[in-house]
Length: 321
Image (cartoon, rainbow, N blue to C red; front, top):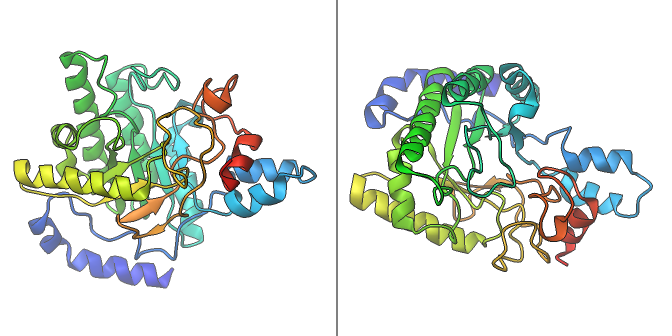
């Protein structure tokens, strides 16, 4: 804890310089304010393994999944959102660990895909929700992945809806900058197989990427780390050429150990990837989608609902079959 206080004091003295260099820069680096990533004590894998200790699959799930730092997703199921995020980052802060959170409640969420449809009831409701999300984190260190799929999921939307979505995301980034200065926010940028790097660079910029720390790739998907790194670098090349800046990016490696077979929804034969850590061709490699949690009623998760933990899927993903 003393180490974090010293880092924060040093960062506060450096604040004017940081702001002069980049308006979106935060006062401190949350990875240096903490001693490693936080392991969610209530993750689906950990809870299932504890409740099913006699199951032959439990030892592997406990050893390979339950102890790996994995993001916690927040949405309408989270209750009073400021209380929920505050409790989660507070628990991580107690142990001097860095929590990874996913904000997943945008109005018209998964509008074109449908398996995870829902979200806030209106743009104004979302603005209130995300403000309280950021307020719950406050000055404690955290990483936030902001609204997976929201910028890649434009295929069925008209321009008015796109503008509305961009406004919600830009507003969200403003709230994090205002209320959570020690949080790195990554605006989601889909994956290498969704839209071109040029298109994604434009969408990121129009949604306010300058305000974010960076962007995230491959959330809930299967593309290899090398493919995502190449795509992230291509996005940055487009950002530099068009708008004069670049941003760091993170990659979701939770299910990319065998790469993609072209399916995105509960694809068979996939495998867990490199556990959460700094570096790896990106700023961080993160487990954002929890292995074994369903994408919806599809693929090897037929009959399940999005987010439901499927122990057989989890078990097979450990071994890649």
